[in-house]
Image (cartoon, rainbow over all chains, first blue to last red):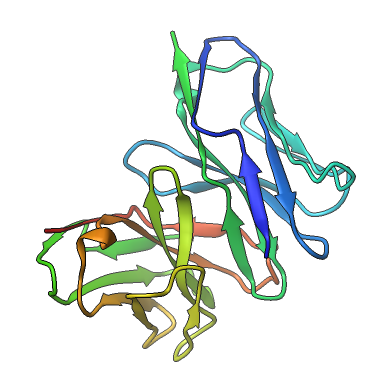
Length: 112
Length: 114
């Protein structure tokens, strides 16, 4: 079945550092790829999506490029801020069942 | 603005008891979903629905039932709660765009089974 593997556990950075959270997927067909963000005490919220090879999704300074060749959708941000501290989820969309499969999440901790 | 609400927000139940978690959405979305969130597992899909009267099994349906009596409401039912079902549960709604639509999540229900 479909699966998503992302950077496990925590990533700890200082403000203005460059962020990369890795996401690789395994799926039949041509799924849409998503990033969601979850702040403490809230439900996850949609960050952005990409639906075809080489498409870049972006929002709030975060970006990721759909790479069908390497089956990846890595999340990047050039300069993180303390307010970016949250849990980030990579997900893929199953077109047949109209549902999402999520990775296990990566907690981003930004130290001031 | 999209709105998904859940009730209760916190629940303590006893082993063997029945628990019902409720979800309401005002987005007029066809699809609704129930997830549980656990450390080390992320978000896992329990049940989902394509519209009133429909329910589908997700990846971890054992021990859970779902009910979709209307477009707006989707319930998760634990007939015989067990401590392993202690978790945070999220409801979400989404359009029926064949896996390309974003999902809107509620604020979550924290369930503790003693």
